[in-house]
Amino acid sequence: MPRTEVATAVVDLAGVAVRYGPPKRQVTAVEGVDLRIEAGEFVVLVGPSGCGKTTLLRVVAGFERAATGRALVRGSAPLPGRGAGVVFQQPRLFPWRTVGGNIAFALARHGVPRAERPARVAELLERVGLAGTAGRRTWELSGGQQQRVAIARALAAEPELLLMDEPFAALDALTRERLQEEVRSLAGRLGTTVLFVTHSAEEAVLLGSRVVVMAAGPGRVVADLPIDLDRAPSADLPTLRASPRFTHLRTRLTELTR
Ligand code: ADP
Ligand code: MG
Image: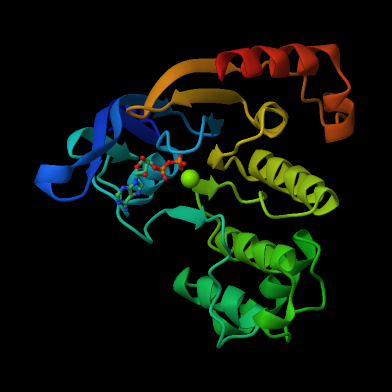
């Protein structure tokens, strides 16, 4: 019914706690987390190491279950491999497949007919700056190149929801900038909802439409900062970064994360 359509957020966490370990020595990773993400939002999670950012992403991906509270994706309990595309900090490619083979595997799972896969593989590799590498072995590529393959693989399924856990942390500055541009424009173009984890206040403000700040002990949400930057199509990342509004927001975010 249309009525429920309107009310359904892409991500809906309410009172979520996650605990690790056996009952007697339990670690509470996150507690009392409320987080609602609407379609098309680009939400960035920031906070110190150990505050539960990865844990929350894993809950949304369906890899981890909430001990208490409610975790819903599009109104249902999240299941791994269903709906959300995930990019981890480490690429985790299949070493026995070629670069193109890794992406074609994702396309096949997404139901793309065999005959259409080579062209789609080429297009996806082009998007992440790796044109012409389809036949290479993954272990022949640098760490940064492997991460780009992982991003192309996640995009292959055209996920409605993209979960990224510090995906650019290990990349050199130039590659990082290129991929920041690419992910942001791609998400905008396709209307993808993104939940993105980073340590960098700069990256958070550049990419996010909203930044959610977490603190540790136990992990919880402490602030929610809307990023009201003028993102005209002509405004590339260097232009955004040079704007006074950007500087103001980054300073504000740095204060909130102290
Ligand atoms: P972040 O990604 O923000 O650095 P994590 O979600 O990885 O934080 O971890 C949150 C807390 O949960 C930390 O205290 C961490 O030590 C603990 N934790 C994470 N994964 C496990 C696990 N598999 N077993 C036990 N404790 C864990
Ligand atoms: Mg983490």
